[in-house]
Length: 228
Image (tube, one colour):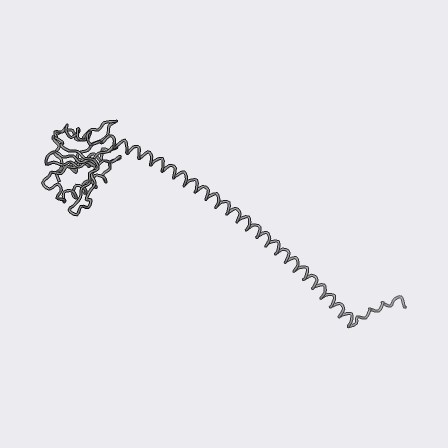
């Protein structure tokens, strides 16, 4: 009879319940604490990784900026050296042009067209009534009442022709050559066919360099130059 009777369940007291709840709360708090610690470690790891990445990016950016600066400095140095070489070349070419288009040589070319040049001047300054400069003329030739004003350029362009037309108009407005016939001429070491045709349309003679000599265009004496 005794064997058939089930064992009586252990009686749970209120203290047991409080103890269970306390242990459960402690377990949760420890779990939460551990979780928070893991989250903090992970956040710290991410922050350190981000900081390391930012540092790496900053170093790379600094390296790129340094390389770009060095490249710009090198390009500026090369450009300066190139400009100097081109300037020196331009000066030498200008010297050659000035040597070629000397007044005597230009005067001889106009003599071939029948002009009897009496005077020739280089770098002639024309002033107005107030003694201020009106125009600078590379070469001035005079044949009695005819005055020829020659503009010289290394590479003659249409713009230079237009400038010389304006120069001729300014000179015409002065009293210095009152009663004189003004004739324009343009000279260049390099003269394109288009520029040459444009100058002739304006009624100007053209002198161009051919090797170490010069020739005047047109060589046909039937050409009637414009007289300002």
